[in-house]
Image (cartoon, rainbow, N blue to C red; front, side):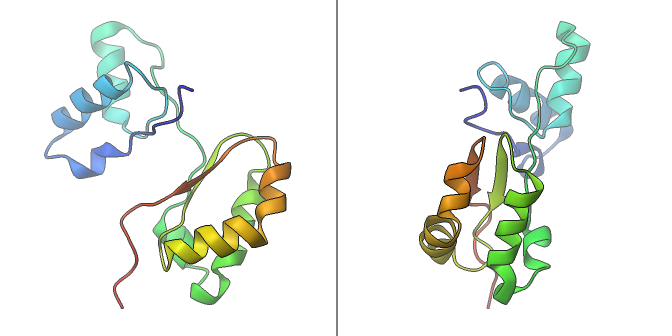
Length: 130
């Protein structure tokens, strides 16, 4: 599937040019990207009207704003807000193992199985410092 690897690489490179070239290389084989520099480069140099697409995705601030005690509610909210299609949910804000085993794998399992789409359980930058 063309969305199996999503590019969030812009934030980890040394320049806009690095993001553009690396992101463009990614878009040779995949369609998922949040690297606008790559899309702009491909439009300018190759005439591509739209070489990549994004999907609904959470990030740490949107998940941690619910608080540790309500992380399950935050996950449930993502599924309710995006009942169809691809959705990615950062899941390592507090405890990736609890998120995968308990929240996604047990508490929300039936909801996930009934969705018309794919949930991407996304590790990101690791657990918050204590």
